[in-house]
Length: 550
Image (cartoon, rainbow, N blue to C red; front, side):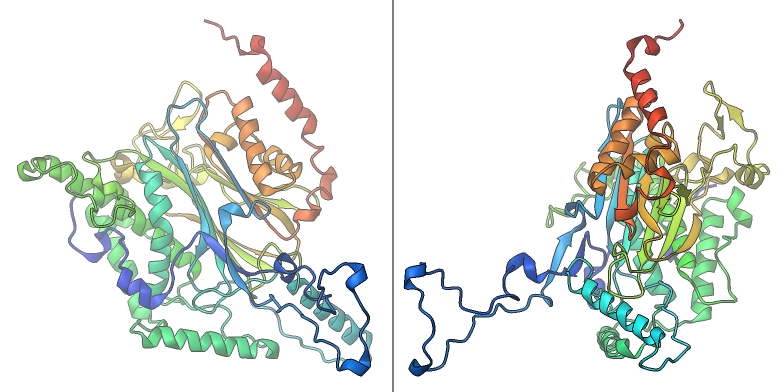
């Protein structure tokens, strides 16, 4: 039977401002970069004189007999000017579009920003061969170095480090709620916080420690001094402690066993291991399960309050944060427990250098964590094909049906031909309190991919309202035809709402990658599905095609 637990694992995830002020800046919805010199002073580098703006008749050449020439008023260099750019305002790098369709309200939510966790990018390989200074190999290396420096000087590719000293780690997520917005809104506000907290508790270390490049030695020393300052302020050491990691996993699994039971009595996440150091996959799995447990316990408290005569007499605004009106209200403040849930798909991108992942010459590492039927797609530059990083967790999936056969009494097929378990179309989701004992879990499906420079053009995250009626290749081809990621996201949602028949909520996030400028090169660009998309638009606009037999 579901019950309340006093232990730490069942505690709702809350932020301690004092603790986080000592540790790092935490999640933020902007990225930090260097402002290009030409954006403020276009002529500062090419100016060789005062540019006094006097009429030609008043301009006289300098006379050497009257003294030295005046010093040119050179503009100060702006390459080191660090600015904050809101990610939602960077239309050429990130785009989002949301539509509620024909539903009375929108249950989809999303999140995008920079998350403060250690970098997990693959380190650049060492140079194992030495070449003479006059050799063609050395000349090629010098050319590559100059091109990199040239790219770093245009401002577009020059990024700044995070507060911990590592390159910034970007976070993107889409959440598709069902039964209401309580769970999807909770994930939008709390899931990234749980990932940050879990990374700190596990002592997750950066994969960039000990980079062999001599050119980065000074930068690493600065980053090390920053981390030392952070630790000197009272933060726990981030050194790996196997017993601590095992204890965290044991407490979490025990909490699920005692709180929910059923399927979770013999539950053991595949990412949990006591033989190796915790990885980003371990952190993501723990954060997903911890967030789901915290949300369930918050709803159980509301259920217990309904039977409490004292709690029922309290005012409706008893939980309002009166001293901080701008603070978002927790979903636990609703009077009745929420029985719905939400699916989730998140993507984290890390780079080995401060150069951002959208620069054509930058490699990066991508991790995705997914449960439900939201989708994450990549567009490959070489052939223009859509690469899916997620699978739908439906009862019809062989792996999911095998996992749940021993617990689910039966799978039923609804009038639309979809298999359902306890009335749910998804076998993995957050919330859904009434189906947890039968195995509806928030254990994520995790994928890891190393992205070569300009290997992929862009990444798309969509909710079921888009992927339910639009194919993966159609989604990718729609974005290819857009000039910016923002316009691409709008086109995807617009097409999904036009051709869709159920009027579901639709959300699309488009993230620019290194091969964006070459998105139409491989596979004939967007021509592969252009004819079928035009036909579907015509059919959707034809009123005779919408007639149904009574």
